[in-house]
Length: 399
Ligand code: KIV
Ligand code: ZN
Image (cartoon, rainbow, N blue to C red):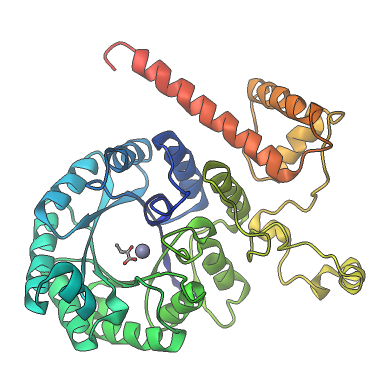
């Protein structure tokens, strides 16, 4: 059996904090449901000191998903850690994720602190968190532009203080794979089996996924990533790409995750329906063209045997084999079949009726509806149901 790699999803934190990606708490809860069903190991739900919305999201995700491991972000300062711990107080499996910058440029211009002062702040923050939770992650922000000796020293001090995961973020997306792998190998050697080494990569040079994969080969066992690769600037490491690489290229990347890959496309579409943009059409795994064949020679080869031009079946990632357009003359039965093909749970009669009403209203004004349209309608239905449930709970006596 290959070794397990943990998937730490930060769609609701690093993803959500980027332009055009903000989500309401009900939307975060709907997205969290999909991520939990998909099998992510950790859900980072927000940065509680940053806003009331982030605080509420961490609380609500912890309350609604007691089975999940929920993470909240904090700087290594007492008031941040207190606020994050407070937001996590209903979580059954909380993780406190604290960070401080470690690179020379951040120390000099942003923090105006010495290396020793930063190390002391990190140790104090971790010790404060460990008094309340067992699971503490420490991130050395801008770790990849940090002097390696200091990075080793602060990683060891963090583990001595009680951190159970050490994350080395490529905050500015500057690494190339070989270089990142060497750095991660050095940190793995430093902390041994006392902590899991995690990677958090950004895509400024288009290398976030390649860097994460190289780091896993060098000993990292947690990847921090987001659906559709959303995140600061050019984005974070794409969850769907990492999960599928480990499945399709297990011969070269012999690791496994808990991700149910057939839920990747529905999750990608769900996210796209909540934020202001979807994946680019040529995005690997979940883009609209990822399984489309236009050129005559390709179509001919594909029809003779899909393997001529496809390295995986679309169903592996939840892209429905059929992308036939449904129109206003399509019945409930065809709609229900498509809902199942798209990886959604069986709808009740009442849910199907409501979906069908919305479907016919939209189809009346369009030539035909695609899978993305149907997914948007399903997502709207879920959000309306959640809103209605919350109103009922608020009206309940003693609520
Ligand atoms: O990119 C980064 O360094 C971060 C940390 C807070 C983990 O998002
Ligand atoms: Zn980040």
